[in-house]
Length: 119
Length: 106
Image (cartoon, each protein chain N blue to C red):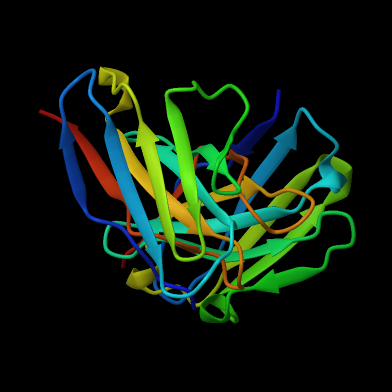
């Protein structure tokens, strides 16, 4: 069965960076895009962007350009998202999710990674 | 960006029908999808392409609509359906979500 296993919670200081991982299993990793979504109580669910796991090509929501960097390691079927120059507004639960052959719906989701930014 | 508007909450009695609406700020054709999120869990896809049931999802759940107005229905409502339901569009980039409708039991 399809599974997306995310890395554990992070506590980071303002101005620093964090890198979250999302290990996929149960399907051919390079056949589907992986997307990342931010969830906060105030802003709800926000789409950050997606990565083409075969080519490494990326597409970002304008709002998250310069904040998020998406990469993949095909050898380990793992997607990564690095968040840089962290501020308290970056505190949220971040999900990875598998898209289809096109960026359409999010068929499978990871369990989420809580990122807390605090001095 | 396309804005999706949902009412914040809905209270329904067990065994009755729950209808949740989602209105898009511009046409998304049939590129509308619905998710269920229970407390402390990740969202789960229920409906894709406005009316298609995702794999393993009970037939109690259904979706309809096109253009700017969409409806998500649970009939009949069961206790396990307590959750927040989100719509999401994929017609335009960036993909956007509604703010969610919290389903409560009367």
